[in-house]
Length: 180
Ligand SMILES: [Mg+2]
Image (cartoon, rainbow, N blue to C red; front, side, top):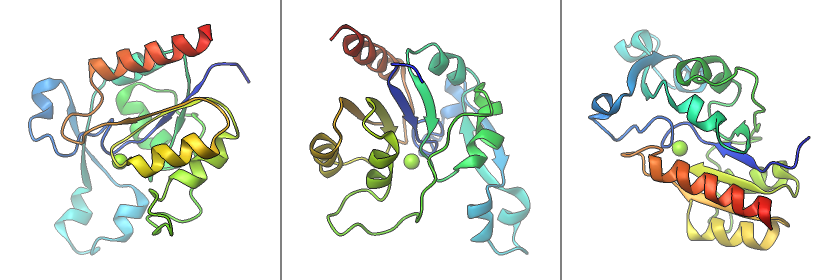
C-alpha cells in the first residue's frame, strides 16, 4: 500500500482505439486475440471465431503508464485476461490488480455506466484516475458525491486512444494531488 493514487485502466478505447482505422500509422500493432467473453458470443464455425478479435495496441504504452506516479489496475471487461493478453503486448507487468465485475453490461437504474458503482466500491476511498471511453456526466456526478477522495474521470475517444495530452493530464493531476 502506498499513497500513490490508483490509475484504473479500460482496454477498449484507451489502449485499443478500436475506431481508429489508421492506428498502425501511429505505431500501434494489430493483434488477433481470443478473450473468453467475446469468443463465447461467436459461432464456433465462423471465421471470426477462428481468427479471433482484432485489437490494436501500442507497444510503448506500458512504459509510459509505468512512468506515471500511480498504482495501475485493470478496469475492463477483459478482467484477468488483460494481464494475460493485453499486458505483454503493451509492456505492462502481468500481475496488475483486476476489478472483477459481478455483472457486465447491466443497465443501471440511475443511468450510470455499468462499471461505476463497482469501481467506486473497489477503490474504497483511495484517490483514483479512471480512463475509459464510456464515461458520462452522470458518472462524474456519482463519483463526486459517493467517493470520499479526489477522482479524475478521463474520457478517451475510441478513435484516438491515450494520447500525449492524456499522459500529461494524468501526470499533472497526480502531482497536484501529491502537493495538496
Ligand atoms: Mg472501453
